[in-house]
Image (cartoon, rainbow, N blue to C red):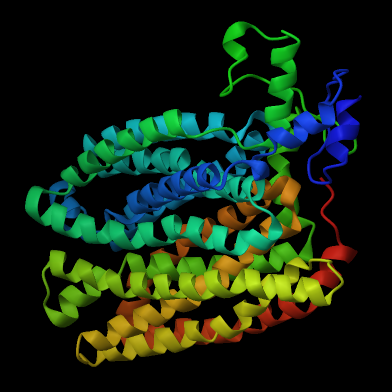
Amino acid sequence: MDLKEGISDLSRAPTLDVNLDDQGAEQSVINDDPRSWRLGRKWLILLLASWLCLVSPLASSILAPATSLMNKEFQNYSDVLTTFTVSFFILGYVIGTIIAAPLSEQYGRKLILDIATITFALWQVGCALAPSISSLLVFRFFAGLSGSPCLSIGGGIVSDLFDSNERGIATAVFALGPLVGPVIGPIIGGFLSQAAGWRWIFWFLVIVCSLTAILQVFLSRETNLRVISARKYAFRHRSLKWWHRLDWYGPVKLLDAEGQKDGDLIRLFLRPWKFILTAPITGIICLYSGFIYGLLYLLLTTITTVFVKQYDWSIGIASLSYIGIGIGFMLGVLIIGSTSDRMMMKHTKRNNGVAVPEVRLRACVYFSFLIPISFVWYGWSSEEHAFWLAPIIGLACFGTGMIGVLLPCQTYMVDAFPEYAASSTAALSSSRNLVGTFLPLAGPALYATLGLGWGNTLLGFIALFLIPAPYFIAKYGEKLRLKYPVRL
């Protein structure tokens, strides 16, 4: 039997440039499918991916409360450069996700993640020993580049392991890492820098990232069905050297559904951009979610300063204010995680068993109203020196609203493009990280000119103006997706 016929019957995996004449090849492919693995094994791999995505964003924001100590040592007096030391890390995300996602679809998830986690730990050593602020910026950029693959490949892992009616809760659990990480980071950074100095932030990261790399190398397994099947074929036919016939690694020659070679690197790296530039629905999603994510990093780079100046708190105590966003995140994850799959299954049943990915996006409409409300609340309560709990409640509202927007968008990208889930989520991740890099630079000037009240109100009005975007994609998304398909 030709292996192409066996895999095409599975309806989800592109074909392989291999022939397998052994009887029962199709059943062999089905048995190799990660979706048929034991539940415990699948959740172990998912939780490990989520942990990777917690450590990396944690490293992105952990420096935020310690920038005053860094400025003192480097004699830096530029607010823009100070903010850039935090957000420049995110610029590495923009480039890294675009590169890593298509490579993981060609060479496997595990190989890319193993290399990324090891190099990520090494760049933290450079940050800890940085002799100047310019060298710190360079090391932070490459750390972001090495820490980015998990953010886009995670969507591919969710698609590899879970069916569409299970992806809502799986995506919610996976998202705990990348969403909680930026909140935990400043809390750790605030107390650690106050007690031992800002450089010890990075020595802490060296330890955590090294342990994470060990877990990734020894506990993770390949989940890409195409790669697993090709390596199994190569092992049976002894077409690779013995050190390539391992479960972990080995080059494979893959074909897409039209029989075209995936090996063209230029074609590979253009794949995520096609999701943004050729499909209106994904372009709108990327722009809107990018703005929301940019607001998060604007807050992360300014919250400590606000509570130090407005409430006369120490750096360590001020970093606890990030808990407000964290509580909002957890609440949002609970709501989306408990309702998304049920809503999807209910609609699929009414639709004669046909799943419509755009159903996931309906929740965005309701949660989007929390974004402008939270910024007006947070801005004026902190401006007027209201009781400290008031602005923290505003931050919690933002966290809930942000999760209610970003989680459905990410799950939608996986549902709509399951064969290239890594590339589709890379498009989403890179666009929002691009905004997350540069929007925070406007924070200090915005607050200095308009104050906390009117500055945050302006951001709230922009968010209010953009609310029609989630309504539009929820109502007309299916028509746009079918009318303008992504041609890869």
